[in-house]
Image 1 (tube, rainbow, N blue to C red):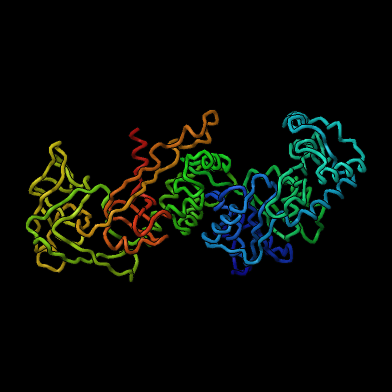
Image 2: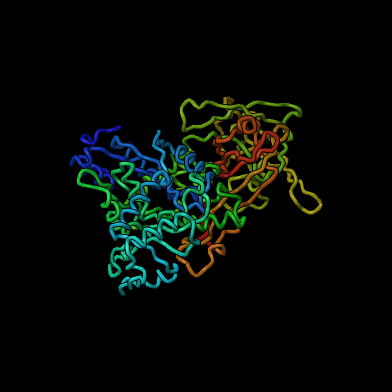
Length: 565
């Protein structure tokens, strides 16, 4: 933790600058308490990660605390599964809330009492109109609303109806409690906003105790106040909500303490949708394999795909926080992932599309051991051994019979180095009756292994390989971007499902991996399959059936593909 007096505004984002100014001015007695308030109605996504980094990060930076508060005000959409996943995601990103886990439902009694007080003071009333009637009666941003025919009910009648609403006497949608503010306000949120609605559905924490549930705009600010939150940091869509936030909080607060709302821009990514409703639709319709499908922008999906928490935090630091909405290129996120994986991933050999290579002048039955560096970027990462034999597998794409100029891989009469081993020359191409290549026959130069006199001999190509006798079969799942449209949100007239990328997942069976990979394929392990990409064992992987997810390719080939199209 850092003392606020020791920090300067230079280098801080605008939210941090405002928090620092409040601390230095002694507001709230110099106390800092933020909160992260997710709705437990789905899994968190990369956009939530930006909010998590802000809410928890700013508390860490200035020596404050951050609460985790579940906004559980709609029991129809909420589930304990979502609560558990949110906890896991926050911890995975590297943050902790200690003993400060709260729920909006913790404050249902206080919120109900406040609603009763407002009713008694003539500041709230029960409305019998339908949601459609209320929406129409609210007017437009340029046309004032018209008052509800029920706005003039007496406090006594309103209180009686509200109590009966909570007793379960009325059907869902038949009545709501509205704040009596100003139907002509230029701020649409002030036009008698709904405070409570009837929901006849058990709550995952309170059961059937309540039949009325508070709306977000009524519950959120009050929950902040009850918890002692000093800074309610949220995204820009809540700017027009801020006056209503302050209106309700002022019914409780005094000069000594009042939460302050500050807004920043949300995270938008190309080739991605961030709508939790649309993500839920993808899951429910089976268009993805679940919330943690590695193509999903959810934190759990990214974790399963092999993204690291540090890469996500680095990406969020890089794009920063502003007061202006922006569409960030997913390539920036992928760059952050590559950069972090390059730092930590173990280098190994794997062949995705194998063709057999036979070294005809290498002794049959001989097994030689070569050593490969685990990670040249990581001091002290060590080496591992790999068997070398007469028969190997290389990538089929690494051979061409009639290569173009500047093809530096293997071709008839050409030489390449097998990484970590010898230089070989292709002498013969063996084909089946249909003309398909089945084997490449080569000879090796025994003087070119590391430590030998000819080791320094140069050739232009270096290929990865695995020993055919020792290779382990595995499955590779090659993931790409879930959508093939840069900004799906910019095409509201199209069904977003029509914009899904049909090439977002390619399953390749029968890949060949070196024994070291199979022996170290525990969940969470990060590998760089040399010359191919970064991979991690999938949750489906077992010792008898290895499955690897491609986290990301070594280079961004997507932009090249798109430009050609």
